[in-house]
Length: 138
Image 1 (cartoon, rainbow, N blue to C red):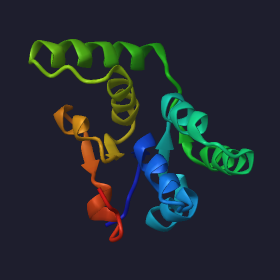
Image 2 (image 1 turned 120 degrees about the vertical axis):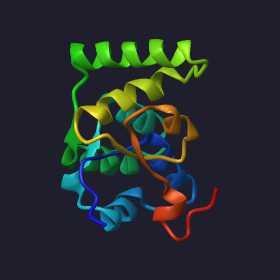
Image 3 (image 1 turned 30 degrees about the horizontal axis):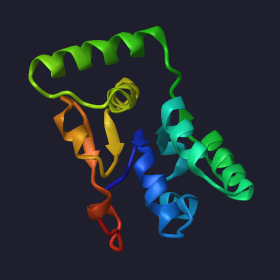
């Protein structure tokens, strides 16, 4: 199945890095980087955790290839509405996850993530890395 307009959550990058796997190669073999999306929150979460300058530079260059969804006032409004609605249903999710979801919903509504919180968000199509990558370990 072709992957199009998929937000890659920070936990996917972090998982590959912890396993000493190159996230750029792994994601590039999974989907065309032009079909992947990112936002400032994901980029910050990933880059701030990278220890080596060489890998940080490579990851920053990879992020520059992805479709970047800026955090507009409308995305903030959508995220706020989503969080408020979910909270009233007893589903209090981390703010950064709601914000990332609002970015993904702006264009396509798909996310590659191992974070179960995203299954609680209406309209999000979740790609589970355990199903997408044969050697993914939980």
